[in-house]
Length: 335
Image 1: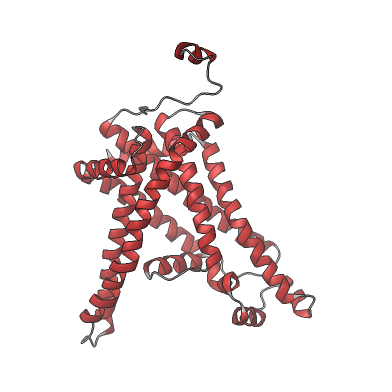
Image 2 (image 1 turned 90 degrees about the vertical axis):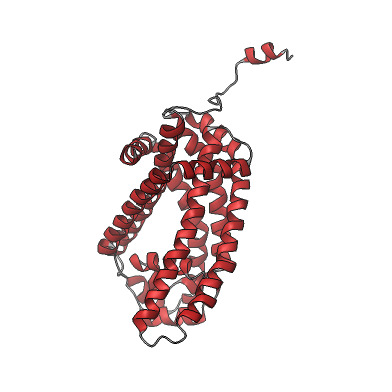
């Protein structure tokens, strides 16, 4: 069932190229204001100095260190760790360590999450129906589900806030301190930290999986209650723990393979010219692959749910059509 659901999900993703293009475009639009702000900060610092010519021709580490020493806000993130695989490791480390983000990044993240909350309804509806819904059908489903997903997002936010505020502090503050107080071998302390990271990561995954299936049940079964969708998702996970865990593990394995491939081929800090543009293209291809994998998570989980409790093309809500037939008003007795 796991392999069949994964392959079914892949077919659903590849059958909707417009969804892939739309999600990639939304990601670029979200990042564009940050890129423009960073461009302005660099331009303001360089001005018309002679250093500007050298920076334009290649990497100038002396200038980079000078810029980083005085930069604040978004500019403080401009370091060699934003290039290639180092950026992936930095993001993962920041997540597990609960490091605070820059205000501008938090604003961009909030906008991106709202955009995903809106688009996810149309994406899941498209994957559940397994046929084109056209732009009007996609956005009708997206608008219908947006407020449901927003309420789900609030519930998920409360859960994540509790984990990062209290559980993280207890695990890596109190428990880790007591466990390693008398430890003299560094490898033992590292083993404790790795084990606690695994526990914390498992709790994050549990919330993530629950929210994923809550969204799916809200769309496929046309559920309007966020709490009801969460309870239904927990019930589905409890009744099908093996397939749910197996499918998530398979998708996670693909993600690890993607990270491994990116670690091998990702560029470092390069000079100007063709090498710079190739590095930029490589980064965009990696982002596209990450987005495809995210869509694969959504499609394969939808396929697993439908194969377990429904049928492959089932969706409780009627397919949205536009324009609505005038006969509908006549039947309802409207003017």
